[in-house]
Amino acid sequence: MHNDFATALLNADLPVPAAIAGHPGRRARFNVYRNNVRVSLTEALAARFPVCRQLVGEDFFNAMAGVYIERSPPVSPLLTDYGDTLPGFIEGFPPANRLPCLADMARLELLVQQVLHAADTDPLPPDQLQALLADPERLARQGLRLTPACALLRSNFAVGSLWLAHHGEGQLKDIRTATPENLLLLRTGLSVRLQRLSPAEATFMACLLAGASLGAALEHSLQQQADFSPATVLQRLLEWRAITGLVTQGEAP
Image 1 (cartoon, rainbow, N blue to C red):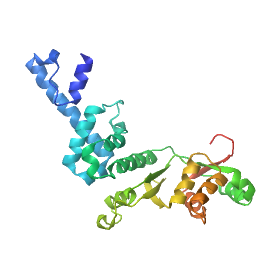
Image 2: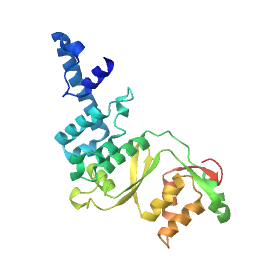
Image 3: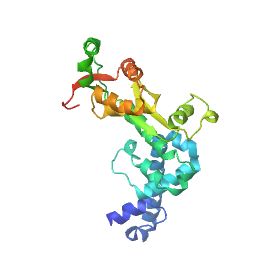
Image 4: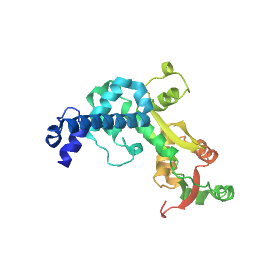
């Protein structure tokens, strides 16, 4: 009974459960409740993925959301958590193939929310970093503990430029969607900033986020770009107060 009720509740094409169908009043209330649930879940998805919705239009987004709701019922009582698996769903949703960047845009929108709501941390005191910079040999063995309000996305599409354009920065007509972008996301104040990175810079950041030492991160990046310098990335991390501690190689990050 419970499974039939839940399944029918999320799928408008299924008949009202037999235990309810024989009672006209209950059947009517069930249909109203079913509609309200689907509307609420669709609105929750629209709130979490506003740029995706703008890219495909309201009708397409609502239809896609309806299929997603049927296949992926909520696992949390919090509507704000609903939709974590939408990017993977989009990849396997044939009608979305006409906009190949849509899944990565959904991933970006999830990361923006993750970074925006991450815990606050205190930045590394400047004197500790100054002492480290004065000792290059020790510096190479050191890893950086980064704020949880920091993330990296590597995409085959210009999702960062599209996201910024939908937030008033840049023109959609100037964006070549098929251009790969590597994006560093960092929270500053109450907003999330997106910074485009070169492939080597993205490799450097990926290594740091994985807990590698600065020396190891640099070595991997130099394999990708022989003249790579981490100065720009490190300077940005300092400016945005993203470095919260130091981790000696071999210690837990």
